[in-house]
Length: 184
Image 1 (cartoon, rainbow, N blue to C red):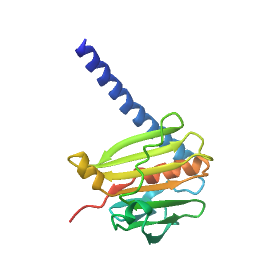
Image 2: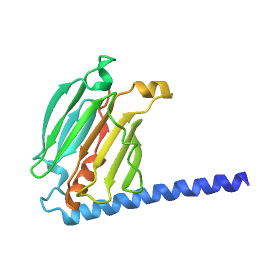
Image 3: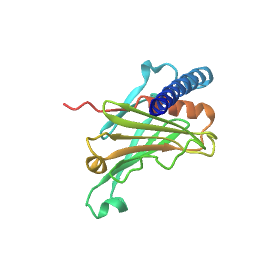
Image 4: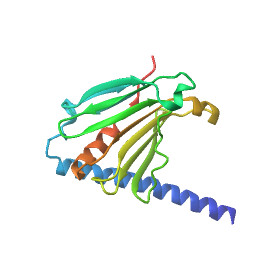
């Protein structure tokens, strides 16, 4: 009985990974087929760094920022870093700090949720089924050896809303480039 359960869990995990790969391929194909601004040529995309993370963006996107202290961090005296990345037809709002969301509130019932890791960092991408009214976002956080260390780690969340399907696909392509800055 236990062996059947393990095999069943293993098959479910493999199917889940296969579905993520399939979804990624579908979004990529749709993105390149429907892209009106010719963002498919990534050779001229530029890298934008947000604290511990970097993303590749089309050349018309620019970084703006603001510093502050959010309500969760006033007690601890920690500053957060937040701002916007603006493009010609869309923009992203971001926040980096210990109080930043990890998008746990977004469920597969209303969102395509893609979880993965890159260089020992967790990355979650959420794509609303209805791009025009739902959130499209990415969250990244360093993985740690135990839960106590993980709670102390800062995370990044980047969010946008009110997108066309083509813009949502562009956001997905940008989010897939998210990676931690290499430590020296």
